Image (cartoon, rainbow, N blue to C red; front, side, top):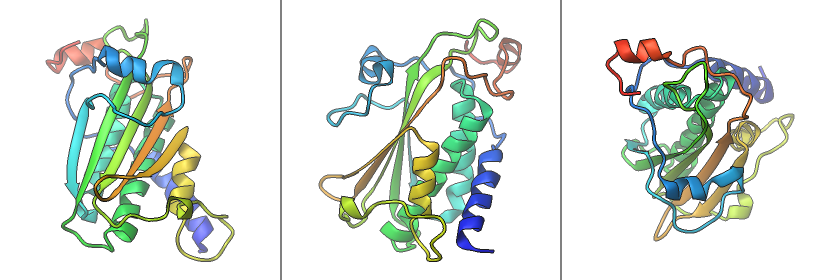
Length: 219
């Protein structure tokens, strides 16, 4: 199987796979500063950002990838993204972390990776009043790897038979905005944004108000 076909198959598999490990039942309440930062789905702007709703630090060990994928999927479900978008968000984070491990840290298993999540609140769905869908999710992935020329970070034609570049291609395919930049004093930063269309259906795994209550969650 060629690399192009293999990448497409992996894309479909991971996009369809969404872990079912719950990550908590608390609803997100974005701050006014965050709402202003991501208002109306405007392009990502550089500069000081508000504090994330969720921030993780994981080691650059592939052992933790499946757990991160499941967490991202379930977070997207909780924020009201449709099922396909939940899989795409999980896939993008998986590919980004794989790139950091493989190319940034040269497969070292003990280096830090930080993942931050910024959710922009939306209007509650009348059929799911206990769940307030987000209009966009911004994910920032940072590392301490060697900085690279930003112009060299680009996707490639899937028909080219050579390794490398497929992760960047997949990330740009499934996310609405992607930006790479140098992190100071060292390392790289990847910022990705995924918008939720106003008429997009909720994931079938999004908890209903009754399930939230039975789980002891706070609506």
